Length: 221
Image (cartoon, rainbow, N blue to C red; front, side):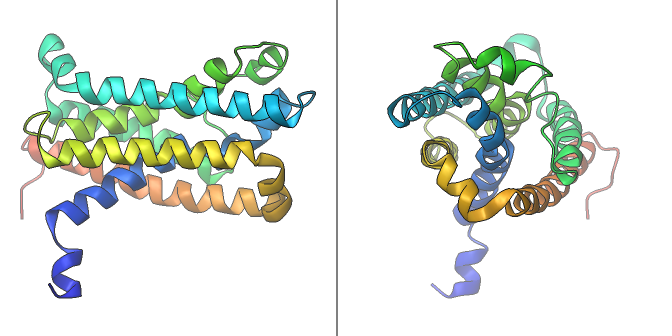
């Protein structure tokens, strides 16, 4: 298969969309300062345990919404276009905060880090949820799931694979947060977060436009 044919294959396009949208919204790089503050007095072993709990919590939450997403749509009578518009707005707000190199209030409320510093289960709350698996990541998973015909379709495999890969990378980044910050520096992390924010804003607008098009408010080309 030629390279241009491979790049336009549905499985490749959807897989790239899934991994990019989920990873950008989980955004483990932006969580590094908060993670280091939470584990400031911890040794290396406890820091890895907290990172593992956070990544595992993120995996369980996002996987649960992926598997139960279509049931949630049916239970509440929510249509995919409506969720695309709502999800696009949430992603847009988070992306705009990321462009300023700061955490969105939907991912980290004021005082969460200080309160969690002395908690044994800080890896679950607030690190796992909402810092990693926040409303934006959940919304993105739900929008992706809304495009899947059934649980056994290959697109569901792409979503679950993207969640798994994102959580593994998040664990690796947070477990080595000290080294990552040393290599990238505060400036490097802020630049990386801004780049991811820019891409997320573009992704949010695409979700928004797709929703309006599916609702018939924007003509299809």
